Length: 329
Image (spheres, rainbow, N blue to C red):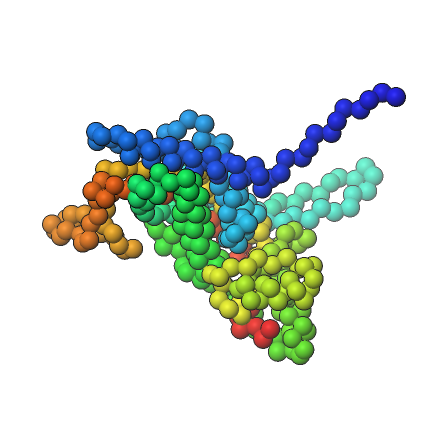
């Protein structure tokens, strides 16, 4: 009997993502330690200037998927690349229907209707934070940095993506619910009937775009758990605290496009001073106004971390998003 070659083990996707993000965090820590141990003034260390990080940071969005619904939804959308473009235009192409053709008969010619379509503008998530030298030297430093990264970016994605906020040119993209007219919630009894009616109405509303493609439901954790329990997991629903209680959304994932850089950029510095405020001002404004309070990471033996992640999206077809508010279940 001829021996068979052993089958290779399929890589564990979760392990691959965790290992990649772990390597990313360790690189940040190495840069932070260099900054802490250097006595002379040094420029900020940055992850984008470190060789070998491109592959490890490509898994960053995927690492958020298990914890945040927004990352899960974005990962399913049409993925675009900036490639140094100032903006990306997505032309719309109308559907053309094929027809039956007899033997030796000419094929029908049908011209698709095209239009300019929506434009994706470049936006970014960003935050400043600082960790003390004791934290950075701790054996728990990697876990702390990981949590800073995930908890800074994950909730920010959810809160914007699942909102009805309009696009602010130059600042932030529109939420998926911007301009969406809610479907009236069912008042059927028992509550399982109301749930079925609401979910069916949502699916029907986006089906014109999704067809048999992917449709994902997103809801407040209370409603998400109710759907999971009452359907025995047959209906996929993502939970997010950024969705208002008693609100359920349906999204055709082919109805929106996502443009992001593979890696968030993290700068580490021990020389920086910054305005310690959630709505910061320039340290010294054009009129000579000095921001207050201003902190120095050098004086407090801390490391300043600046997180910057270019990420943008746009709705390709507004019919691909539907929402029901004030459900009874």
